[in-house]
Length: 503
Image (cartoon, rainbow, N blue to C red; front, side, top):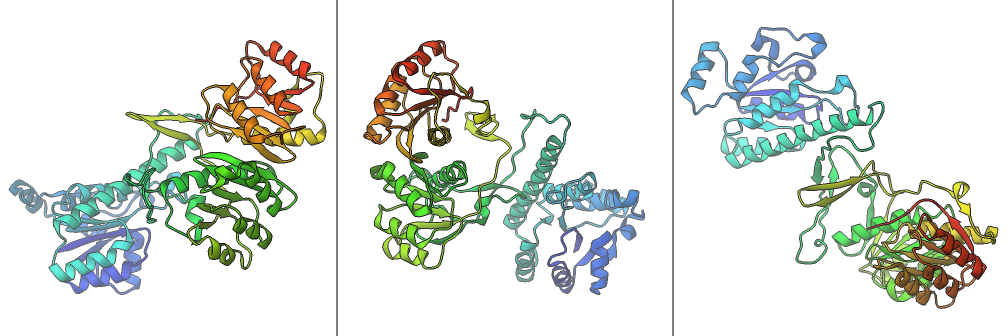
C-alpha cells in the first residue's frame, strides 16, 4: 500500500507517518513535508524519485505529473486502467494526505495552491479506491481503522471525500472573495457570490420552533464575534436566542458611547436607554415596556456590575443577557434567581460585507444596514429648532428607529425610549402604539419615523404624544403640508434624507 503525504500544516504529521510505516505502507512525499519526515527519521520516497522530474518554477510544479495522478485516479475495477498503470510503470496510490497553502489566513498569489487541490480532488473523485485526508484531526481515526480493519471502509472513504471536496470548494470561494475585495474599482455587489459555510459544534435546542431543527453555520476559514462568545450559565441556546441576541448586541453598540441597555423581543427593541450609569440605563430600558421585556434579550454595552445585577434580579425573567464581561459576584447573583437565563459574554459585534436573505431559488443581496447621514447633513425645516438636550433625544430616537421593523415609530425622552411602535402595516397605527406605550412620558422628547410621513396625521399623533421634535427622512409628495403641520404644533422637524426600512 502506498500513501502520498504533502501537507502545509505539519500538525500530527510525524505520528501519522510512523503509524503508516508501522503498518507496512510505503510513503511518498515532497518539498517541506519530505524535509519534515527526513528530520524525524521517517523512511519515505521523494516525489522526484517517482516522477523522474525535479520540482520546478520555484516549487509551483512538483506533483503535477502522470506518475502521481495516474496512481491516484486509476479505477482498480477496470482492467484497462490497470493495464495503463503497468504499461507506464505507475504504482497505485491508496491514500492521499494533503492540506493546502494558508491562503485563508495569508491571502496572496503565491499562497494560491495548485498542486494540492488537484491531488485532493483526484483522490476524492476516486474515493471508491483511494482515501483522502485534508484535516489533521482525522489522522488518529484513520490510523485506528487501518490497524483494526486493514483498510478504510467505503463509508469512511466517502465521508473523507466529501470533506475533501468541501475543503477545496471553500478554498476556491476564499480566492474569489479575495479577488473581489482587492479589485479596483471594487464592486459593492460582485457578479457572483461563493458561500462556503461549516456547521459549528454548538448544539441549538431547535430552530425557530421546536419542531424545526436549527444550527449555526460560519464562513469557512473565518471567525466572527459569535465564535468568541462565552456562555456562563443557562439553558442551551436556540435559533431565536441567537437571532435576537444579534439584534440586541448590534443595537446597544449603535446608540453612542454612554452606558446603554437594550431589550429585544422577537427581533424588535421594546426598551432602550442611555444614562450616566449602567444600572440606570437598564432600569429605564425596562420601564420603557416592562410587560414586553419578559422573556426577552437584554444587551449591555458595559461590564455587568453589582448594581445592575441587583436591578436585573428584581426585574422580569430574561431569556438571554449579553454583556462584554461580568464583575465579581454578578453571575452568581443572577444564577441564584434566574438559573435558566443564558448569560453570554461577548466582544463587540463585527461588520459584514453583504446582507443576504434567502428566497426561492436564490438570495436577495444588499449592503448591510447602516447609518450613512449624520447630524451635520440633516436639515431643520421648521421655525422651531431643537435644543441641545432635544438633539440628544432626537439622535437616539433615530438610531433606535433604524433597528425597529417597519413601519416604525419611536418616542424618546430624556435618553429613554418610552414608546416603540413596530412592524405595523401603516404609519398611523405604529404612532398610536408608540404613544399608548409612552403613556404621557414623551413630553418634550423626540419622535422618529423610519420613512416619510405621507399625511399630516402622523405629525398630529406625535404632537398629541407631547414630543417637541420630529425626525424623519422627508421626500414625500406632501412634505410642505407635513412641515406646515409641524409649525402649526410648534414642533421642530428634522429631515435626514435617509430612509431606514427594516424587514
